[in-house]
Length: 290
Image (cartoon, rainbow, N blue to C red):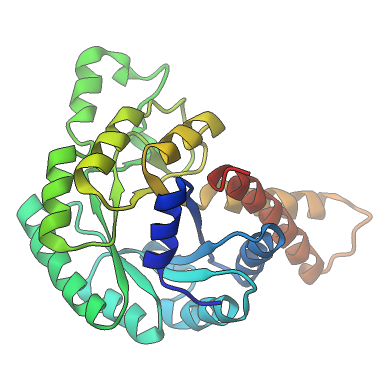
């Protein structure tokens, strides 16, 4: 069933759980995500990231995401991830998405507030929720961790300067009216090259200051213990894609390497979908404390 992201995250916040948000870039990944959620009876967020337009366009994938959400036996929110323009957010709203992320985190604070507040005004008028981002969430090329140059105290302090500040988050939430906020506390988009150093107490401080559900981006590769602490401290939505995608790729490779398997693309795709489903289930059990 198709639901709003806001109602899903409000419930997660009350129960100190997190909803898994998974990018569906192919039919097989969407099927794997929905089957995982149904088998566990978990709510789930189906996402399309604007950066994945190179794989499939929003116009193509949007109706498919909505189709699977509406027929699902569990609550499903369909969400635009990392929308970087007004036009793309409006496009998602018109398609029927129940939430959009407007990402102006690379801009100065005043511009981020002004532009996000305008998206919130438009989206809320249509009954659609809005996620924003404050601070800088790393890419794998500059992840902080053991064995890197950033181990020095000075470098680590420099890195923390671009983590989300609790008071700034409070001001941002009040001035924009966003429904949830992606925060920077040491997680990384992509594959972790080293052990991440997460500032987990910062998450609790942001939660107490801002008072809205918080979002973890770069969820793949975080330890189960750190997930649980982050969720206890206020994370209500976890974006998870890289490791799910890797599970599908690994299953495809293993299928083709098995000389006894028929050379049928559809059978390989089914194997990939099954592997992604199992990886998603593993993540969901952690997020939902099962």
